[in-house]
Image 1 (cartoon, rainbow, N blue to C red):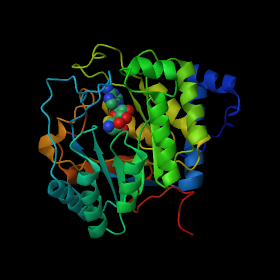
Image 2: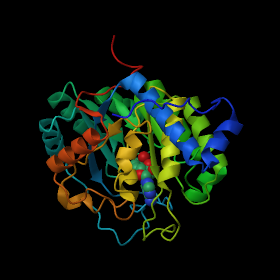
Image 3: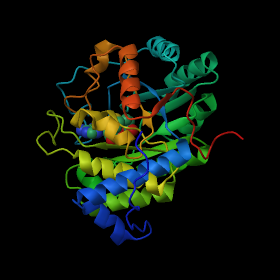
Length: 350
Ligand code: SAH
C-alpha cells in the first residue's frame, strides 16, 4: 500500500489563486507527485482504503442538444440511436444488484421521449424493488418541478457536470441556446431539493486555459457538491472538435487531486475517460484522490453506441467482467473494493 509521502506536503495555500494556478501549470514531477500523494492522504483520512462501485446504465443516446464536444449530440447523423425500455433498465438493475452494486446510475442524453411521465414510473419501480439502493440520475437539464417529482419518486442523487465554470469558455463549447447560468441554476436547485449533487468538468477541452481550470475549482467550492466528476476531454471524430487535441493524464490527475484537497469528503470517480487515455489511468486516479469506480451495466449490444468520445473502453465486456476487472485494478493499488451504498461522508445517517 502506498502511504503518505515522506516529504512534507507542498506549501500550497488553497485560498491563494496564485498558488492554485502555479500548481495547475507546474511541470515539476516532484511537485506533482507531492500533490497527488497529499490528495491520497486526505482521501484516506475521510474514506480509508475503500473504493465504491456505481453501476452505470447508459439508457438512451438520443439527445436534443448539440454540444460541440459530445459524440451523442443531435447533429451526429452517423450515430445509430437507441433507447432501452423501462423493463430493460430494470433488468440491468437486477443484474447490477446481483453483482453486489448498491447504486444505480441512469445516464442518458437529453432525450425528449424521457418525460417526467416516462421517468417517474421507472424511478418508482426501481425504488420499490430496491428500497435500500441509491438511485442516481444523470439526465441533463430539466425544470425544478421535474427534479422535485423524480426526487419524490425515490431518486437520491443527480450528476450534472457544469463542464466549465467560465461563461465565455462555456459559450465556445456549446451552441448559444445553452447557457452556463441555466446549468448552474439546475445544480443549485438540485441541491436545495435535497439530492446529493455531482458537478464536474472536462480537462483539456478546446480553448481551456489554467484560468478556466481555476474557475472550475472555485465553482466547486461555492457549490459544495457531494460528488465531482472529472475526466479528460477526448475527441470524437464525428463532432466539430473531432480533430482537437485531448486532455492529458497529468493535468487530469492534478485536477482530481486539487478537487480532493478543496472538497475533502467528496466522492470522486476514477472515470472511464481517464481509463481510456491511459491503460492505468483509473488506478492513477484512485491514487490521486479518487474513491469511486463506475462499472458499465448497459447491455453489451448498445455500449458502442453511447459514443461520447472515441475508443471508449469496456464496450466489449459483460457486466460481471467489468466488476472483476475493476476489483483487480483496485487491489493492485493496495485499495479495497467496497460494495456498500457509499454515501458522502458528510451525509451519512447518524
Ligand atoms: N446529458 C447528460 C449526460 C451527458 S454525458 C448531461 O447533460 O449531464 C456525460 C458527460 O460526458 C458529460 O457531462 C461530459 O462531461 C462528458 N463528455 C461528453 N463528451 C465528451 C468527450 N468528447 N470527452 C470527454 N468527456 C465527454
